[in-house]
Image 1: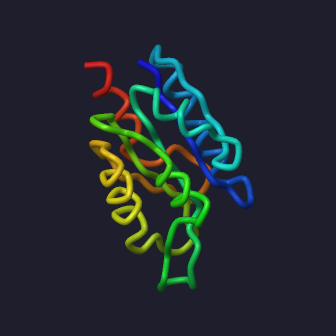
Image 2: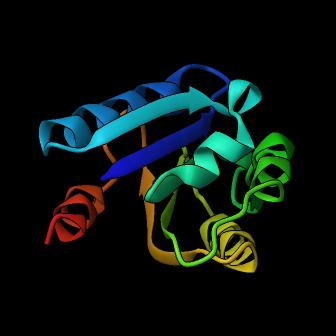
Length: 137
């Protein structure tokens, strides 16, 4: 299975999480590309069998958390009809309601969002390994 991981990272935390996610995916025998949102090609990402989109958390500590504008704009360029998809974020204090909003944007593009994962730091978000295992079954 081909999996595309696209992320937006300001300090390198989300990039590190995305790269660890990609290592896990390839370790399970899947092909995986991992690219920053600024350099991602929407047509190429849309050709993947499964798509993971991640962002660092913007906001004011406990309120107004949201994905970056670049992340949401990129989601709007995708054609994901029937594709497996997940959204993920990295955060320091709270991720608020950003993951459901990202998931809705992906579903609006036709994806079947089957995971919303978050990590407090540069690690693989909890639940992501099980999601990858489900893809292989």
